[in-house]
Image 1: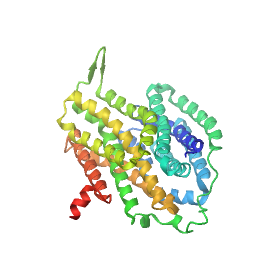
Image 2: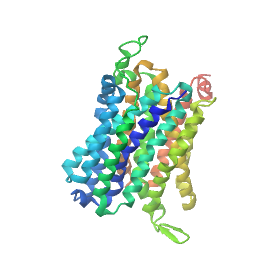
Image 3: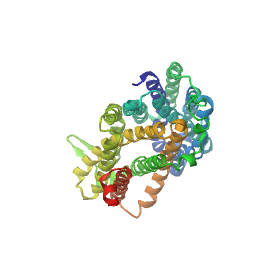
Image 4: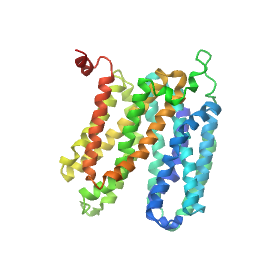
Length: 409
């Protein structure tokens, strides 16, 4: 059973709030002077600080949902998103933008945790994958729309576009907020222990299920949202130094990298619900999760041995396995929160989102630190080996698995 309306509206709110941020990722590196910036390192800091600010604040965001409930939390996040989006049209200078980007990081952290909690509360256990796929697929439309808008808007009309987007945000978000369930996560059911919902994160991490989920989330986020996302343009330049020649058109390496990333955003709304529904089947989520983890790892590990044409095809297939992996992984995290720590689901999901944010923040740092020592494709290969090792750890962790039985003999 799925109560679709709250999930759809929370995903819709998240998508709308994401548009301006996605525009900025396209526009700011191309026109830093329009923001009063005089160095590319400032651009890098501004585009990354929204991730780093969430690391120390994740426990506070979990506490917020314990205290005021989902509706109030998401309303606060939407208000912050509107404020930060409008700010991009009227402020410039590194310091002011730094503050605004920190506020957006807080907004996104609240939205993301609120979305996870909505999926958990509004879907039965056997429909969790479909619900998570529906949520992930819809909110990713905001990123796709923002990237397309940021790439198409002329430099002279950026401020106007931001104002229009912000006005649309206000018009769309006000009615959407009405459909968020009005509940207070601080009031557990009568049959649940009153203190479990407030277990500290370090206590939750002592449990095998949550810690395995958090470590996996960190690794997947570091590989895909960190290393891969931040270095794919350089990888394209290494592999396709002259660009890609198609009938009647020549695409630069940067353009191919942009198309690859847009492909990921574009297929997610279509495939995430499908992958989630498949994971709800009789075989369960684990086989699909292992397939996504091992498939992604194998593709990355074999990249150095591929020719340019096969290499490019492999990367597009990788985006499909990445969509499968992240959708099923999020559903597995919600399973862990609901099955292993039902009275502490906010704490479990807070720990999980913290792991994702930490991986997303550490990944680019590691990627750029290694890029001078290894080719990017070789670095991708090591990332693939790491994913394959993670898949083996999951197989070994399941009781009754062939590997565990063999080791016990």
